[in-house]
Amino acid sequence: MKFKTFKISRYGEASAHYNLGNIFHAKAISDEPFVNFPALKDAMEHYKHVVTIATTMDDQMNLIGKAWGNVGNAHYR
Image 1 (cartoon, helix red, strand yellow):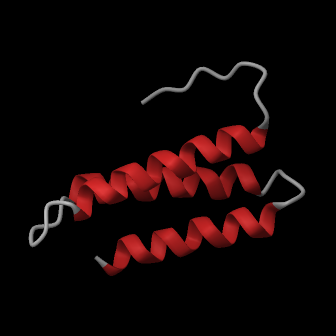
Image 2 (cartoon, rainbow, N blue to C red):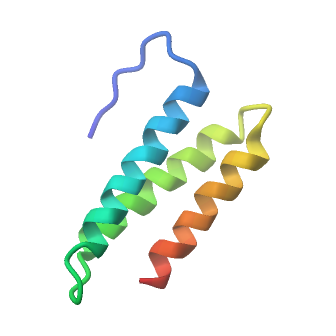
Image 3 (cartoon, rainbow, N blue to C red):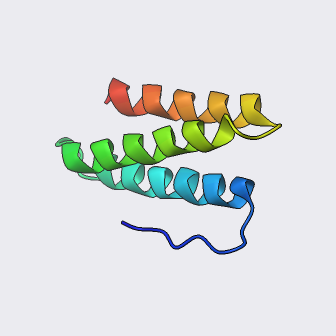
C-alpha cells in the first residue's frame, strides 16, 4: 500500500499507520481459532513504520511505546 504524502503532519502519518496496523491486527485475530499470519505481518509492518516516524518527532516515547506494545501483542498471537 502506497501513501501519497501531502502537507500532513508526521503525527498524522504515524496515526494513519497505527490505525492500519490495528485494522490488520483485528483481521488477523478475527479468524479464530486460525490466525491469519499475512495480516499479522502487515500489522507489524505498519507498527514499525510508526516507530520509524516517531523517532523524528518530539513526542516520540508515547508513540514508540504504543507501537512496540502492539508489535508484542501481534507476536503473542
